[in-house]
Amino acid sequence: MDKDILIIGGGPSGLSTALHLTKIAAHLSSRILILEKEQYPRHKLCAGGLVIDAERILEGLGLDVREVPHVDVDTAHFDFAGKGLNVRMPKRHAIRVIRRNEFDHWLAKKAQSRGIKILQGVSVKKVIPSEDGVTVQTDQGEFRAGIVIGADGSNGITRKCIFPNEPIYTARVLELITPLAENEHKPDHAYFDFFPVPNNIAGYTWDFPTIVNGQPMRCWGIYDTNVLADQKRPALKQPLAEEMQRHGLDLQDYELKGHPIRWYNPRNKTSVPRVLLVGDAVGADSIFGEGISIALGYGAVAAQEIAESYQRNEFSFRGYKHRLARSGLGQTLLARWVITYIIYPIKWKWFQILLWRILQPIVLFVAWVFVLNWSKRLK
Ligand SMILES: Cc1cc2nc3c(=O)[nH]c(=O)nc-3n(C[C@H](O)[C@H](O)[C@H](O)COP(=O)(O)OP(=O)(O)OC[C@H]3O[C@@H](n4cnc5c(N)ncnc54)[C@H](O)[C@@H]3O)c2cc1C
Image (cartoon, rainbow, N blue to C red; front, side, top):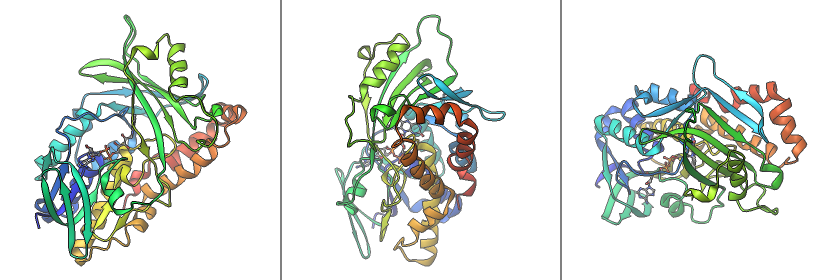
């Protein structure tokens, strides 16, 4: 047996699981090994928007994300066709924007400084659980572990191995970066615009300020949950091109990249004996595809499950799904899933206008109670 606890994937969910384990069960630290297929600092397609819950979870681990280059967004605008709801947080920024190559590298270094071993450049090909352990086949040979945590993201191999025939709920996402125009002020507002919904794109376009290699830039993108996928839709890049055109930019001039986001559905399975899943491997937020805080939250809940399993010396992980559902994380994921099936299928223009422009106090209340602040109830 090479290591007791093998974590597949060194993104926020895998690193958070390891960091929470060192916090609540320090004696397990030396028994953890993370396998990461890339070398840090590695690229990860992501707009890098951190909400308050991400920062709160990191603070709970004694980590200060201000060490990572970032842009603080004062106001987040949730619009329909350029007009809508402005969200500010009392006495703080609404969103903090990081780049994932820098953020994940920073988090990995923090884990290493706390004694966690990370093997980089090792790609897992197959995960085979058995009664007394798990065999993990990689491009660098075979590993044996007592338990495995699948933290390998939306396209991860772990979930494919343990649940080969399960339905998959994924969003389509496109992203690109543009430089600031000459004399353009450094932006500090983030925009989400739901104008594509009446055209059966069940999501929004975004425009965030960001910082790439020290240079202020803008990150644009479009998110589609796919819940209206059975209806006629334009090409995904079309509404993004329209939005950029309104700001005098031509999408064709920039490199567009895409990646799916697997989102949470209460039917998603979460574990088999000796293998449990965290982060996008289970599912991110379905409304926005917000997954960094969620991935960090999965790490906290999974660590608790793992620590208790070692105390009992019993690794069925039978209670993991229930533990998730009971936690603030499970509650927000469920609420967001319900909201997704309200705000996107009622796709008509008048409803979107009502939602983002007229029902503002109700939307703010729902956001405050069901979408934010869940990390206070992680146990
Ligand atoms: C375009 C886009 C924009 C987004 N914007 C935001 C945003 O602004 N805010 C937000 O909160 N969320 C955002 N998200 C979602 C967010 O990126 C994810 O939810 C988050 O990264 C999930 O973390 P994770 O650790 O579960 O998975 P990942 O971050 O995907 O990490 C998985 C890790 O596993 C490694 N890995 C994969 N396969 C293997 C293998 N076979 N062997 C070994 N290692 C492996 C990968 O290299 C990676 O390091 C966005 C996503 C996309 C696609």
